[in-house]
Amino acid sequence: MSPILDSIGSVKAYGWGKFLSVRGTFESLATESVGSGGAAHITFSSIPATYSHLQIRFIARFGSVAVLRIQANTDTGSNYSWKEVMGNGSSAIANAGYPNAFMTVAYSNGFSATADTFGVGVMDILDYANTSKYTTFRTLSGYDANGLGGCQFNSGAWYNKNAISSIKIFPNTSTFQQYSHFALYGIKGSA
Amino acid sequence: MPAATYDCIATTTLGSAQATVSFTPISGSYTDLVLIATVKLTSSNTDRLILQFNGDTGTNYSATYLQGDGSAAASGRFSSVSEMRFYNQSTADFYPNIIHIMNYANSTTYKTAIGRSSAAAISATATVGLWRSTAAITQVDVKSPNTFTSGSTFTLYGIKAE
Image (cartoon, rainbow over all chains, first blue to last red; front, side, top):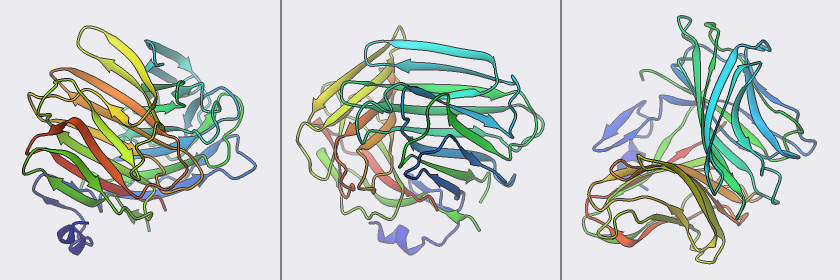
């Protein structure tokens, strides 16, 4: 542990040499954990517009082969596009969708392949509260199951200028399995 | 009231070449760990950075990567190996690795890490790795077969979901 950093842990934001803590600018907003009954989807709602960016960090496991999708503000219209590049362990593959009624953010057909193995991802939702432009999502995600798996980048756009106040995350088929976990964070533009 | 998080747990800058940097003990009070390692190797350009958890050197690790080297994109994997491998590292310059170790403290699931390695002169690489253990992670060893040069930096952050 760093005694220096520990001793000033209550400071809202600080830098120290090359090392910058973002405490005070990165805040936990909500968490969804899937119980033993599974879940068809999870939703973060009533998201305040007081941050610059959002980040969703997740581990997820499906009951069968599935891709992870999202929708914003309960919009089920064909107002989304997405692109991805994925490495499946032997080659790089590119996919896209437009127009879609959802955004694909993680394509991983092995989430259910091996016991105790979960896919993971870190999704950034940039300028989500800005009402002057469409909102862009980007995700780094993947899973590895010791001989099976994939690693990928996704980017996507929601063609709507409303501030995002809710996000629904769901698999295209099957359900989230127990211990799947999604955490929403807000990132401030200034401390 | 939202809870502030993303805390610096520990950090070090090497004063001399070193093969291993160990973060231990790591408390279980966070949800995810983020390792930022800006490293340069002493030899063997394009070799790897390695993670091992809780001192486990058994063949309980695997990884899948996606990589672009400026002329082509490729993917590959390592199965049943004794380390989680993150390619490519450089002997020419210091380049960053940002690795997320997800849900490291639970004792129910295998542990998965995902990260990017950005040796700009060599490649851009994303890697997802698995440690086949349900144990909570209390120790992270960052290694390279070719040692890290003086000036390499390693910082471990904790992120807590409320």
